[in-house]
Length: 391
Image (cartoon, rainbow, N blue to C red; front, side, top):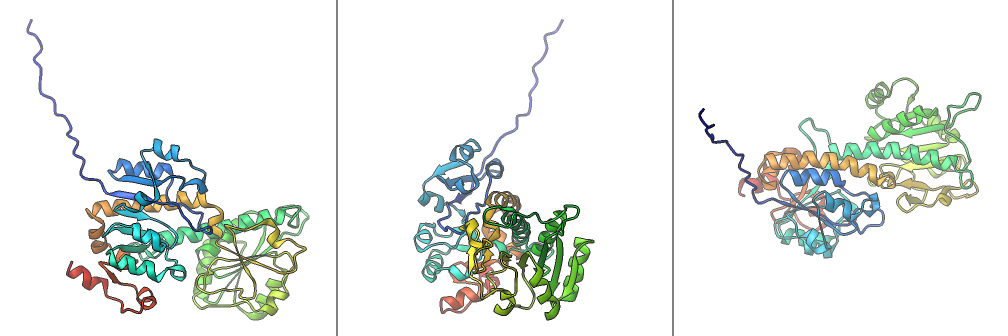
């Protein structure tokens, strides 16, 4: 009997190219509690060949320890090393000191924060040829803004959840539920604006049994929102008398984005209920309630809007009150973005090949490519497409 003859077997050869590094520094802004990446998302990036470096303690705001990230393949480093990566995801406006920590030619991903950008930090970004990209300005092939849209949806749902909790507080609130109890008149929610945040807030409030009134100064936008939300919402144009009536009886008022800016006068605010819970979800554009002091929800106290407090307040920054949900949503969108960058072979090629990423850049190859950024620096904006032709 012949002995078995050994045969050759193909062995898969693993070729690991030089991996790009992704830095995750800790937020030093007290109002920005959101963190861009969960441990599971970081592990998926490591599996794709990236090296992920996180500053020690950076994810404490979403209740994840360094040990959890380390078990998922993340390297725990100091702040300087987290900023020395090829690509850095840092949601607040970068400070002068942190801008100095970035390596030459790095990519910086964060939120727009146009109102809080330091001119000195911007100049450092230009000197170091850093490509700075506003995540919430990135668009996809269909013209939608995946980062901005998911943040708006979170803001809308968070606003209703927080308002429900504040109203139900028997010490600092009214001790009431939004609705759904037989024989008890439900609470009323007035929403001004019919964007994604408004639709998310309306769905949440209707599910809890509240009466929801939705206003907008664009009839087509209002019609689309009404059809998307379904039965139950009371939709109206921004007729002054109708809106005043709704504001007088509302237990919760939420201001969202409008195509044309709209303000609630101090007289209308004075007629609102004592203890009404008010939110402005589009505060960065312009205040919808200019007579009301803003309270950042990342720093808020239950006493800020107690029924016995005469001064009404307006809550802002709703998304930072639910940072872990924001982290999970941002992780999903960032994974897609980094997958696209890998498909383009490099971040620079991604800017060249992805129009939605290109239009979100505000510094590129040492030049300001966003008109607002250039104006803040006293410079002239350069067309990024021209820079790409000669790079």
